[in-house]
Length: 479
Ligand SMILES: [Zn+2]
Ligand SMILES: [Zn+2]
Image 1 (cartoon, protein in one colour):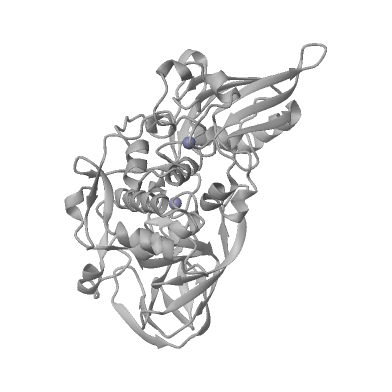
Image 2: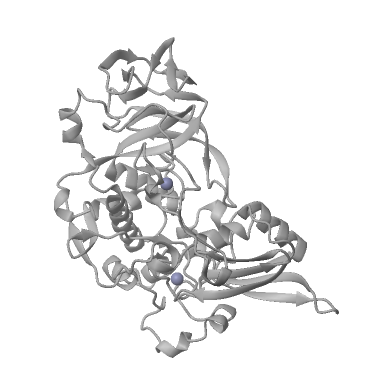
């Protein structure tokens, strides 16, 4: 996305959930607009009063009040209009997975996908960001940290949207055309596919490699999902948080740029002491601002981190090496605070346990595992290519998320780990102990490190400069 493509605040579409039957509550009157078929005429269904409603999916179409539609939108008739969805799952497949009831502002769009109904929330970007930042972080976080986060959340989103953005002005112009975009087809595939990925399967020297990375471009029916795959979005939050509002207002329309491009400003919970470079986690493309560097100012001598094994096994000083509960509370919600051991962590498996787990998670049977060896590590120590050997063969697995996914029931905290093999008296491996560092991919801003920086008096500009070298801050819209 180029900065000159954006002149006013865009509207974005957030995929919230997918169900065979959708139950929702409208808290005020909403205007209902439907399309009976793709490309067909828009039907002004009229206004519906506040109350509970439901839709079902039949033959790939939406049934609503005994009528059939290909897509529907419920638009609030007042600015304060709200709707609620029940049983919204968050943290899908991660250790904090749970279901919540959530309330949203803006429009509710319903589309169909693979015999399921998709609930989508269309909302103005700055309001979406308000929720994302307050959902991702405790609202008590310091202002400079929240401002830094506002800029990167906005940049990341705009960078992902590509050229398909719509503004409120566009919406008015396009009132007579389908709101879903011209490529919308009822039953169209692949809106939320956590398994969507790029795979690079090579076979040098008879060795099978499965190198995968997971990209956001899996979404076709909406812009972003509401889970950690994109950015965690929980609709309207119970308490309004003036700190987050202030952070958004004072950075309104500001993005991080690399020349004329809006930065793909990635971030994660805790880098572990060194941030990771983009190409260690995703496509083999170097990004000038997503490079590996120490999470410290001033940066120590390069040789300090020459040995990544002792770095991971050690306790190096770093912004994110903190047990300051007050700071951690700023960044982590209650359910995340249960994860206390993010900077350095340990996970142990018996050989049988890990062999079964790997088979189940990867769909590949290597028999009883006997060895795991890091063939390639990124700058932060995260393993990019891991050789796994078992009684039935071996495999090279990558990149970081695929490794985390295949070696844990949920996900390992990170792929920066050192493997310790515990042997029995006969010299057979009995146990694998993984000694790890950091939480998440480690690329870009380290949330815990950034919160500590803000606490130490760094400004949001200094924080962004530290985590995204070679970038500038530009203002696209707002006052
Ligand atoms: Zn997503
Ligand atoms: Zn860090």
